[in-house]
Amino acid sequence: MAKMLYSVTMSLDGFIAGPGGDMSWLTEHLGPNPTVDDLLPQVGSLLVGNRSYGGDDPYKDTEHEGEAFGGGWSGPQFVLTHNPPAKPVPGVTFVTDLHTAISQSKAAAGDKYVNVIGADVARQCLAAGALDEILTCVANVMLGDGVRLFDHPGGADVKLERLSVTQVPHATNLWMRVL
Image (cartoon, rainbow, N blue to C red; front, top):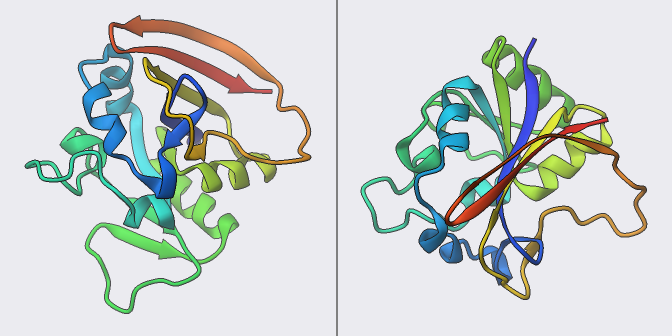
């Protein structure tokens, strides 16, 4: 059965996107990362939030613009949204409720990971008890403002178990299991 993994790159001060969802900050912090390279073949599907799906692309104006992981992965994508587009998008399924999105993305992933992309979708998966693991690549930068990795004012502690810590010159990778 597929596991749900929230993978994300974050600034040292806890932001995954700049103000207004700006992802341009990320471009200079991308680079070879064996942890991510090893993960990609283990991803069977993506569960993406609508804001992430339609938002800024760190690969904008490159040959890999609009491609998952900069072209490093391809497969079925499920976008959680209240407003699906009128026209179908090849390879993308738009889903209007969380539980259907989870079950469809898990079925598509088989025995691989469902990679969750988007802070709000990850928070919803966590609240539903569906999130299994979190991989956070902490970039060597502080943004000062933007979209937080996890924002749940008044929320309870989320207990995590460290599975691994690895590093490359531009990031430290923290892989955790949700307890």
